[in-house]
Length: 154
Image (cartoon, rainbow, N blue to C red; front, side, top):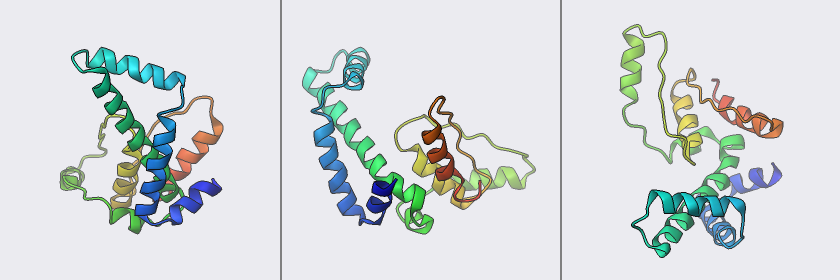
């Protein structure tokens, strides 16, 4: 938590460099997740070369490291600072549905690495927004994610 808080204070560019460095290390460490990722990529992209699948895996790890480096902003940083980094398109559709009497809206998104950022930005636009995902068996992760997702009043 302390590291996330300190990284949140860093300028965006420095945080990006730190994330890139972490990604370079992470892709070199043998792990079960890396093995699973490579098997999945081989199944999904049988026509791709081994080098191309490695490139996809490296880029995915790089994006994940950037996401984790940004979690400090989601936990402790300024929501205004976060909103400056995003452009929300189509939110007027949600507003129009609510204005027309819809009692609730469900927005489905793929669960990919950076959806937390979009969820928090959307929550800052309308505090009724809630992002849901359960982390069974990990109380610390549940607390962390709940804190992150309820900062804007959801």
